Amino acid sequence: MADHYASGTWQVKQGCDQEFIVRWTEFLQWSRANYPSIVVANLIRDRRVPGHYVSFAEWTDEASRDAWKQNPEFSTHFDACFALCEHMSGADFDRVATV
Image (tube, rainbow, N blue to C red; front, side):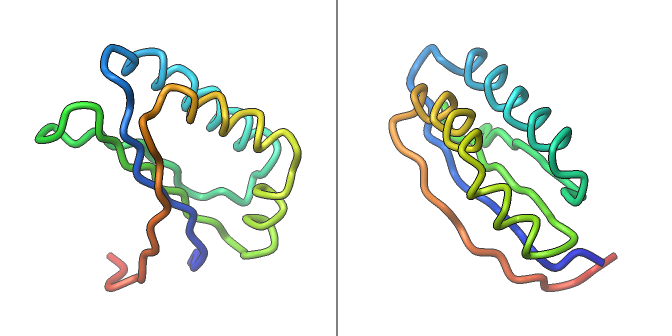
């Protein structure tokens, strides 16, 4: 069972949704190719709020998650997504239940 998370909320600039999704998908593909310890990764659109997305990744171990964030290429990919946003913030999750 994975116990380590990386998450965030993204507010995408008006008219940039499709490009944001493409860039986030490229970010995910790079992450999966270089860090097989990523178990789950999702980008979820909030239908109630235009341009609002939540990203969530689950990791098998904290060391892999930390190495991912410290890789210089992380910033390149992350910044490409962030350039299309009004703002982005992190969020902390606690596991409540496992099904």
